[in-house]
Amino acid sequence: MENLNLGFALAFAIGISLLLVFLRIVLSCWILPVLVRNELTRNGFRGPKPRFPTGNVTEIGRLRAASVPPAGSLKISHDIHSIAFPHFHLWQMTYGKVFVYWLGTEPFLYVTDPKFLQEMSLGTKGRGWGKPNVFRKDREPMFGSSLVMIDGDEWFHRRNILTPAFSPSNMKDMIRPMIESADRMLSRWAALINSGLEEIDVEKEITMTAGEIIAQSSFGISPTYGRPVLEKLRALQITLFKTNRFVGVPYGTFMYPKQTLMAKRLGKEIDDLLMTLIEERKRCHDDSVNMPKDLLGVLIRENKQGDCTTGNRSRNKKLTTRELVDECKTFFFGGHETTALALTWTLLLLAMHPEWQEQLREEITEVVGDGEIDETMLPALKKMGWVMNEVLRLYSPAPNVQRQAREDIRANRMTVPKGTNIWIDLVSMHRDRTLWGDDANEFNPERFKNDTCGGCKHRMGFLPFGFGGRMCIGRNFMVVEYKTLLTLILSRFSVSLSPSYRQCPSIMLSLRPAFGMPLVLRPLYTRSSKI
Ligand code: HEM
Image (tube, rainbow, N blue to C red):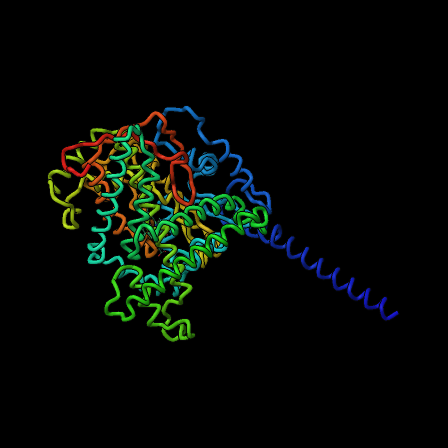
């Protein structure tokens, strides 16, 4: 009898637990999202109809798959929004420049209207918006809890710690490693061409070189040591891209168990490599006086002063060892991929516009002459600056800016409820004809000649580095690297289009050419005898 009672109690307990689990799933997958959707609709926001618990992800997947241009298509158009973001392109036609869509059970406010964005910015203080929580778990192996992922006071404090690493004096010291790495790349190109190769995938080449540069200039390590970190970061990026289709869908990671585990394993392997690097640096420079002032030096000093591993964190609020590794990982990745893509897209545009290649070469001859480029010359490369901005407008390597409302935000007499994610679509905003004129999809660097906003009708219409206090911390580094590398490339090679290039800009965190960037390069013998 006692056994029977025990069995009944057990069955009852299991039954109640299953019921609670079931209710929890129903609540999180259907009831709560429906309530949030009703609130957003009451507040005046419309958008494509979601099907919970997947939201709009199925439609997004279908539209994306259908948007890849067929092989053999020779046309290169800069009107890329319908290829990069086919779902936004379609929904904009019905719902305009501000609407709500759903990644699983997570609401996203889509914004491509700078006026609305400005009103939101005015309606909230800097710390009133953060970064979407929904990406945190998914991107954890890549960014951990580094600057890009944190909010509020913690972000503010960390940003202050890291900013000095990007001071002008530090930037000056970074030019030498940039020249050395670029020299190696250009000599390799010359050797490949001499051996009969007709075209080179410049995306692959420049990404590798930009990786070497960040490894050397920010972490003081040789290409041999930096390469495994970069290779693993690349593999991690590809793995995360495969799993991110179901971001926001409850239990979405279970759809890709193998990739999720692989991402974790790669993340851990990168952590271990970086930890060895950090320990090595600490051992070689055990007093802060001799510590190099590069990014790793700044981070280690903050880690040491706080002595966080012993639990003094709340007193000093310095970096923990875990945070230090996360920051290194973020800078390793963010510090090379975006700049490399900006240069890659630049070479495509210059290959299509030989007249601009010539103009830049003339400017280089005037400013740099036959000597070696240094940091004092960079501001005088003005036309190169216009070209850079025009490339960042048409092919912004960071194709969107993401935020999350940490409090209710008022804009345009509407309320964006606390918790709503915000997706600012730069690919669309940067080619909006009402802001840029009829030539919005054309390459015209002169629009930046007398105006840092490129003649855009709204000052928040051009945001390649984001906006407000969270604006990209590495933008000065990017400009230095961009101008240095482009000067060296254009001084030694001319670029032209290859028939094997297939225009298909795709999103993999950043905006990249899906099939690489093969270009035809021809050595110029005017400035350097190194080839
Ligand atoms: C073409 C090159 C680059 C582009 C287009 C770019 C773009 C961006 C954008 C759009 C943001 C988000 C800003 C916001 O939320 O308002 C950002 C943030 C960030 N970028 Fe860059 N970036 C570039 C280069 C770099 C480089 C070279 C580094 C490092 C050396 C870097 C490190 C970061 C970091 C750490 C953040 C997070 C800042 C924060 O949340 O406080 N970026 N970047």
